[in-house]
Every structure is written in C-alpha cells, then in structure tokens.
Length: 376
Ligand code: SF4
Image 1 (spheres, rainbow, N blue to C red):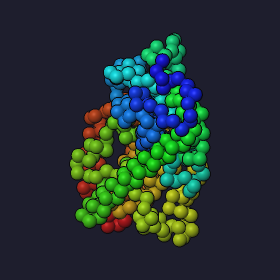
Image 2: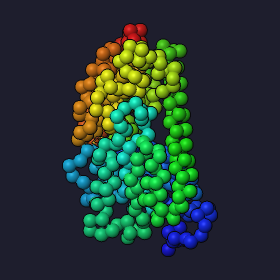
Image 3: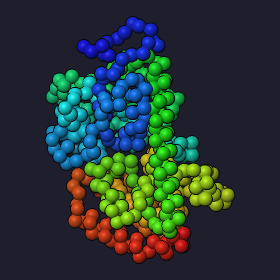
Image 4: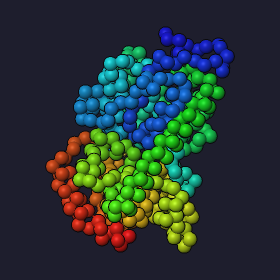
C-alpha cells in the first residue's frame, strides 16, 4: 500500500509527500464553476498539477465507450452523462489515477451570496455523484478492482466557514490529512477560485469596453455553468462568435462597482432593489444559485446597451429551468434586446437546425443591433 494511504503517527505539522498521488475529477455539473477551487485545494495539499486530472468534455463517444450500462434513467442530460466521465477516469487514461474525487456540492460561493435567500445547488447536482457511483458498484466494486479510492466530499462551498471541517472530515483518511493543512489548502482553493473569477470578469469588461469604443454589439449567454461543456452546450456560442460577435457568459459578467451602479443604480435609488445583486423584483424564491444568477443575468443583459442579443441554453429534462423561461424572456425583451432559446439540449447535436437558427440570429443581429444600442 502506498505510504500516502497509510496513517502516520508523525507530528501534525510535518509536510507530507503527496507528489506521487494522482487525483481524477469528473468535469461535470458545478465543477465547471468551482474547478479552480479544487485545483488550488489539491495543489495546497502538495499534489502536483500534472497529477490533477479532469475528464474530457462530454461526448457521445465518451458515454458509449465508458458509461454504457452504468447510467441512470429518468434524469436530466447533464447528470445522465456523468457515467461517461467516471468511466473515462477509471478506464480511459493511460497513467492510472489513485483517487477519484467527485464532490457533492451543496452550495456555491456565488457573487449574489448575501443578496439572495440562499445559493444552493440543484438537488440533482448535489446528489449526482451518489446516483452515478451506484452504477459502478452494483455488480462489483469497479473502483476497488482498478486500485482507485472513490471519495465524494459533501461540501457547502457557499459557506466558507464550514468548508474546512467538511473537507477534513471527508478526506482525512484518503489523503492522510491534518486539520491545519486542510485550513491552508481550503484558503489556497478559494484564493485560486476568486482570482480566476476576477480575471475572467476583467476579460468580459474588456470586451464590453471594446464594444463601447467601437459601437459594436456582443452576445450574452444565459445558461448554467456546465453549458460551457462542448458536449452539453454544443458550442452554439462558438458558432456565433465565428461571425465576429464577441461572447460574454453571464457567470463572468463584470461586477465592478462602477458597472453595477451604471446598470442598477437607478433601481436602487428608486427603492425597487436593495443592492445590484438583489433579484427580489423579479424572483422571490431565490434559493437556487444557478437559477438566481440566470435571473440576474437577464436583468444585466437587458440593461447593458452592447449586449444586443441573449442566447438562452437549457438541457433536456431540466426541471429547474422550466419556470424561468418566461420571466427571463420577458425581462430581456422589455428593453428590445433579442432573445433566442435553445432548449432540451441533449447528446445529439442537431447541426442542421442549429445552423439555420444561427443564420437567423446573425441576420437579426446585423439588422437591429445598432438600433438596440441606441435605444438602450
Ligand atoms: S439544474 Fe437542471 S440540468 Fe442542472 S442538474 Fe438540475 S435538473 Fe439537471
């Protein structure tokens, strides 16, 4: 048994050599907007960056080759395709991993935290790892057979104070973790995540500044973080970008004070909302983080002059998105902003119909964007 699995009686503060440990993380669901936390956390524990392995983007081949027969029925597409990611990490990479870590993320460190009721994940996101794990244990322990330890830490990333306890408790045996080093690794994780988010928002700000300088429009993507996965979102935004329209994802829209005051200052002064991130004027049951952000994104896109078009993406069998379709469309269209929805996305990419819709969007953008910028 490798030494890193063995319990040591040494002093808690002695640095432990984990340089040979390889950790695989399925790149699914809310790992998409928290991956930098996990990288920072594992690096903080002394895991070498090249030994932190994420599965590839979702694809039909991945599901067919690695997830077949292990899937779950009656579920939304983003959860269903998780089996392929697990299987790829177990069977599909040359240099074997020692640990497969699939976090059960209960809440998110959203920029709206404190401005909404809560920032919880969808229950299917949280329970996804448990559901999928079963497919690899039902006949025999596939993890054990392949020399892999499976670990699924339950973690409230939105509640920074509780994360050390949660991760120490769930990972202490697998990584031979001391409490102090967990504290430092969690700090490193949040530092990495916060820096990444800030950098990505700065890049979106630069896009908007370019649009303002050049008088050009851009496209705003209103979707869940995992629609950035090319097999879940089908690269619809990339096809639009090929026509010369810059893309801004809602998750990384700039949240700087000056921008927020410019977009929401009037509503705050009029008493309609308390802060720029408050969505109580359009959405009262603000518990779900990704849903809250979608509602907020619709408001931001509607107010920003250069986001002349909103692309809404949603997956097959997503019960969380259903009630938001009409309100988001109404909010966006209230300022004359173009709104196009791609719903029920699943494994099949209907290239023909997507191409026709892309051409329609490009036509409307080129015809109406200048008018929309002027009016907004
Ligand atoms: S939000 Fe929708 S797509 Fe995402 S896990 Fe929940 S039900 Fe599935």
